[in-house]
Image (cartoon, rainbow, N blue to C red):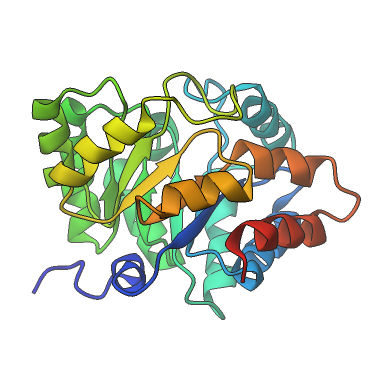
Length: 259
């Protein structure tokens, strides 16, 4: 039997589609992160991507870069993030993916890190700076521990490479809805429809679409075509400027999920 047979994320996506929320762990402190996880669950999201702050987040736009910097200045590290996840997992079955650049995962040894993620209750790992050619060691080690390695595809990905990515990703495929960095636009790339057609033809898992989503109309557009609509920069920015972050997180996501 595959180690992924009982994976929470895979089981969830067998019956549900909807909104995925990205939050930067430690932005405002880890107690806030715990409260945000609760708010995300209450708002009806399908999955939370828990972002590990990193000093050189090359795929992130200004909003997520600033959030990562605030989290790092507050002393956030992977151990504290996983402690927070374990606390949340003690009373929740909502799938959570660890979204991290490669460096924090490899810094203390990949096997050790993945074991810690498994023990904390993580369901997937997402590493935006790890290309397909370098992803196999992490993907194999994660899968052996029952953790989904989620891979990325962009509109610039050719069909041969797209098929290879689709064959290796687990849980879902992250389809980047436009080129560039996160949060740099409020609209999907005009060619997203043709890109999603290619993705859906090649996909062997559910498909999630992210980068630039912030409005209910965009969510509906994506969910009419794919399985998951991923909201990141807009949510992080909304939380940062709110007097009551958890309540703001809940209301913002509630308006997107429609639940």
